Image (cartoon, rainbow, N blue to C red; front, top):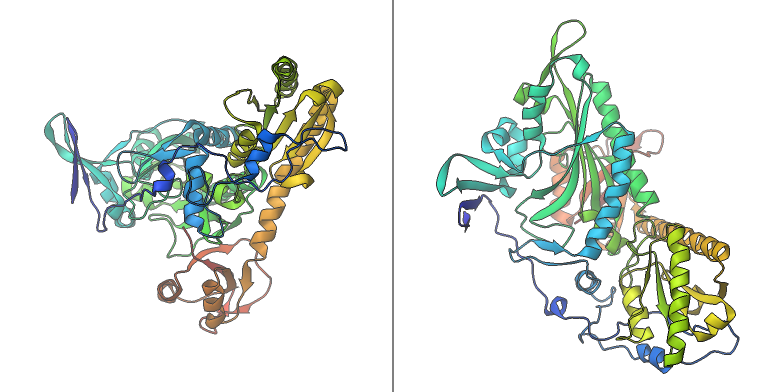
Length: 549
């Protein structure tokens, strides 16, 4: 039992496992001082056939060697080191003073805000209202639902002292809110006229994890959690399915992540739920990420808390409930799905900056004209509601700026030099297409032409990232018809898909022997009866197995 003592509060961590540790690679604490390695090969900003050479841009080709300041470990060399390098160098997050915590920096939080903006609209369109529940929960609440306390006990953080005195009842620092929600629902729900009750909260959560990874799994993280109560089981089931489909649409249309939607196995079902639905995403190292879940809680919590209503016939009934959530781990999913050796690659719909403008000049008498042109282009794009930034600082070379904004994943870069000012044009480069193929010269600065072109390119990038991710996912899923074939597929780092009707014990055997779990039984299933690859018995469904985060 580990105790953290504060001036007026003592926090005890109850865990059957060892405390988590954020490992601190020295690389992550190095400030950006040198240009980053880049996959782009041509940074001329002129629209003429003759290529102009700018020494300050050519400098960027002389990339630092691995291990030097500002470098990003190649993705293929060490995926985890690459991931940590990107988070640090792109200024997404940093380590907190308490092991296992992180500080989300403004650029990383801006991505979270974009996620919030989209989901808030969808939640309200589907009839939900935002509210807030307390962070501290009486321990007796957690104990009321047996499977819930069993599932969460290893991760609970407990407060035992407040105001310098020992508390009469220890408090749980919110790991999730089903228990306190039910306590309040019991006070608010009396009649069928009070149903459905549908709320959502944006909050922080504390879970004392054993193994931590920034954004993906931390001691504290941010999320939204929706909670609803219904009069019938059909209404609750429809709600759970509706919300997992909201998450699916968000993943595809906003994050450009082609998730697989399905039902969790009994072993993987949320503690206290009757059914759990999930969206599963394939990361760049082919591990699965559970990116969002929606739980049909049945009457498990309402029976434990006595959450009842009087139906239209005057009979007392327990409500049927759901809960559903997406967290800041989705940011980790975006990084690991789209990133490359140059750093982040953000889908335009979620990018805090969609277009960066880099003015380029050599002589003092060129500066004013170039900066004025950059301001004009900025105004055109802002008027079109495009998120744009001008990097007009003169402390860094244009080549350094190219590297920096590529590394931060900005979808489009606009370059403006003296000749571009004279011709009334700009040069535009795509983040997702490296080198000359992604660079277009001579795009007019005229408002209608430039606005249309930029919007079209942002749409193209959004679609391209999704198509690329779909291709990668589909090429790394293997259909299997035997346990030996599953073992081979998993050993190769792929996902295995095959008919399954075996027991929970056999599912745990697969996990023990291969490290893979059932990610889901996909909603999209082939027709007809099949043969379970584990037992040889009839199987109605196929399951997807993979190693996961």
